Amino acid sequence: MDRRYEGMSIREISDFLFVHDEPETADLIVVIGGRRRERADKAVDLYLRGLAPRILFTGGDKRKVGEAEALRLRDLAVERGVRPEDVLVETRAVNTMENVLYSCALVDREIGFDNLNAVILISSPMHMRRVKRAFATHCPRQVKIICVPDDRDDTNRDNWWTDPAWRDTVLRELEKVRDYARKGEL
Image (cartoon, rainbow, N blue to C red):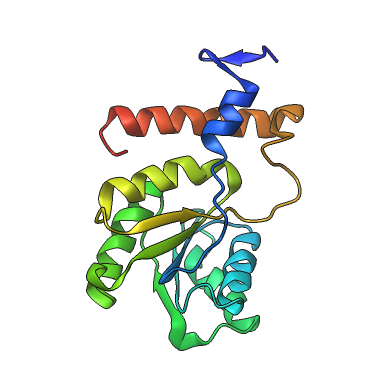
């Protein structure tokens, strides 16, 4: 691989996309839908540590498998000890922007943004920049956004370029951030 992509080095791409904040107390955990259970596992771990009293799972049936991603992740979380009454679910979103817009509407309706000081966002490590910027653009400014990616063991900021499939995925994500920004969604 060329050591630069669209003028960015591997290190610059890693630093830009792979946003990771230290977990801290928040009012809500928002889990962006996906296939991988690591997202639910991370949310459960933070919830059980007492870092947030509620979890919102967002994601529809993007892959047409007969079940919304949010429902599957919710079920995994409840199996691991999350109280069902502490869970909110959004099942229509099939892309990142819909995850953000539908989640913000649900939060405003069910909790109210005036009742939130901070939100923990969970997604894949490489997806955190886009998720953070989308939430920052579409949620009230007073809400602090804390990015805590899931704990997958197959790829991370230190090895993504070593595997051709992951390299392509990360570079596509970089392009998506650019495209979202050009459309004014970030």
